[in-house]
Length: 343
Image 1 (spheres, helix red, strand yellow):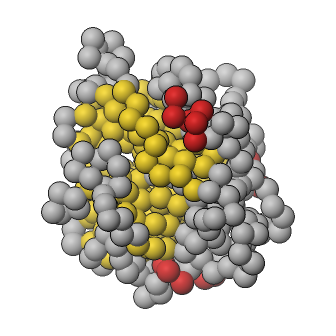
Image 2: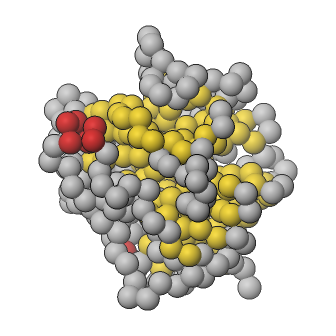
């Protein structure tokens, strides 16, 4: 029997934060004692297909990897990096721990991977890097990740945005856009150069979603403005901005959930089903924990593969609270809004 998680005209204005204290995101992803190929552990998953194999990348030491032939049975792969990229030592000399929340896109004959390093979890002392490879198959003689260095960095006591949670989308004109950010001043969008190696000059930054905050400048509390993990996906005439609200990384006490708004432009304005702007905290709820199998879920990505559209996310399983992979077909209603069903 399916457990349906859907929106039915809800907006996240019905949800209030349950968090009252500063608590940085977990620097590492808890692992189960035994690897379950049907429900593998992962955090912040993204996916790409190369040949007949699906590859998932997520938060972890060196960036964690999984692979599968059928999206049902998964095997654990080797990390992308066996040591931190050289640029990280210069930009964030005190960084240690997991590399966070990657994004992957196939573009101009290569798989481009964007990833975040945060030297002070819960604060904007972070940077996003970029690597690429011609193939994702580790058995191929062409398989080799080339790191291309830093794309953007956020600075403590200078910025009210975080250089984490990258996402890249190519618009209908072929222009790549860099999407990133978390908490406080929200999610940003900036054009990239045609080779995706850097932000395009002159840089023109667009704010595309945020939640209200009563914080004083540079307080960096996590008690409000909880939005992150943005992913932009084009379906029909609209760009859909998926983001995760509230708190991850607390096991069964997490209250993470996924919301969405849409726009005819990558840069917005993104409006939810009830016609609230995502710049004012709007967003239609499409996925929350069911209280049975999943306590909470979030940090999703969306793909069209093999003629089907899929939503990928991590969910905090009940009762162990481990973050595990969710892969489910994404459906749409007659008005063009997404429906998420968990089996």
